[in-house]
Length: 382
Figure 1 (cartoon, helix red, strand yellow):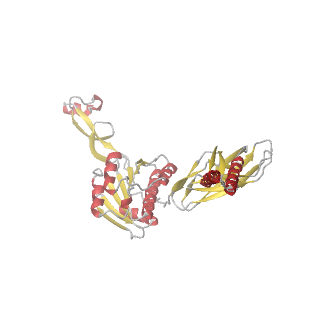
Figure 2 (cartoon, rainbow, N blue to C red; figure 1 turned 180 degrees about the vertical axis):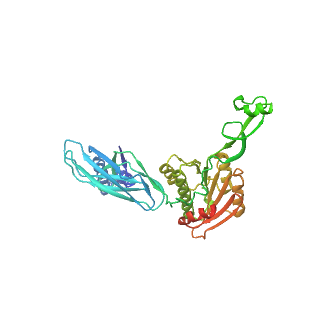
Figure 3 (cartoon, rainbow, N blue to C red; figure 1 turned 90 degrees about the horizontal axis):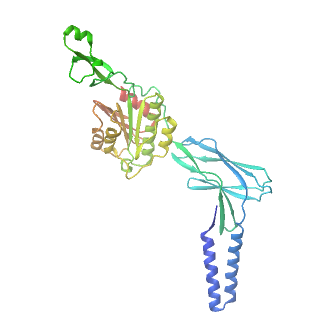
């Protein structure tokens, strides 16, 4: 709760004092009358803010997660909890950078008044809704006193998604049980026998072969691994021709990430200053809603390094960027991905024709529309 005098109110106060000083100095009664009138208006405006309505206000968002283009519905309930009838008042609801106003009529004790509202969502974002404030003030807007009744809530506008069911099975296949060619003395996957060396764990001595050959033989194993998909998104504005390209890139990351989680595969999403939450699809999409371009963000040339540093065990890596990086920068960005990792560099360019170029374990693809993503993945895995 706080009293706030508007810039117009401060101007009236300064003008009133100036008129009174000038009238006393020059002896002009007319100017003195103007100064006194302005002072009276300002005093009345401040007096109109005195008092406090006793309300119980509830802000109810039907759904705090919506997709771009959907309308987020909400309900505002104002209940008079005072013993007396309340006077008409005004309630403000900040929604992002704008503020919606609701008129509350006079309410008898215990009576409720509710308003339904809809928030249009044209772009992906995290929108702060609230806190709800009741406002008392004068008709001229010289002074106002507001009372905060609720806490702000976050509305997550998720990026557009495309279904990838069946399209990504080749790229994101489960590699559990496939050898990594890394030999290990741990009991993971039996590989071969070798001569005993001092310090070997005696639990792994193969006694039948030892008895047959007359010398100690121990088991040797191969490590096995499960698929871990690493998605790395460039957030340097210099990688994108416009904001629409970045929105397409975010939708690509979100679509592939959600499908990976639905298939219960391990996932790491590297975007912005850190990693995104991947416990559930809604949490991943919440974090995708807040992604923004930043001059300090990683560009294409650094994405491979991020994968090597933050997801070194990844078996599949997808590096997503815009249309600006050159072929040399694309090669540089992918060069630092760990050896043996299936790598896809995906350039987002609105309206471009779908293309895929594969050489060894590296594929470089261009995507012009989100609906083409399933077809692109099928071509990558062909």
